[in-house]
Length: 84
Image (cartoon, rainbow, N blue to C red; front, side, top):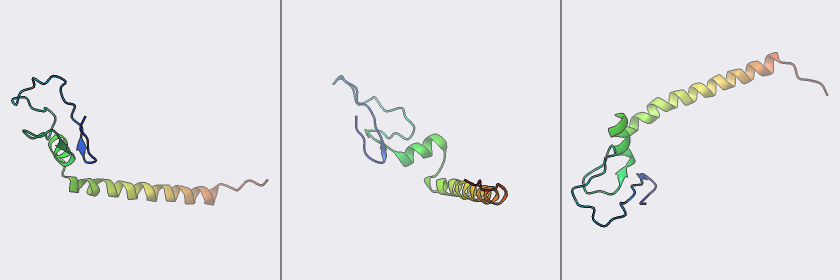
């Protein structure tokens, strides 16, 4: 299997008789290439630009952070500390 950090691995066929007319059927594959770029795969399969991932995920991440901080503040304020 071929693999790099930013690429999806493609398994080669075991027989040497694979012809040039065969192609990879994964989204984002290019003719004559044994590797698929992650950017091409995400763009072709999900229709998402890689730049949009931060625009979608960052507000969710900040929202979870704020929600957990508010939960922690309320828990510390209203639940008494038990005495040993």
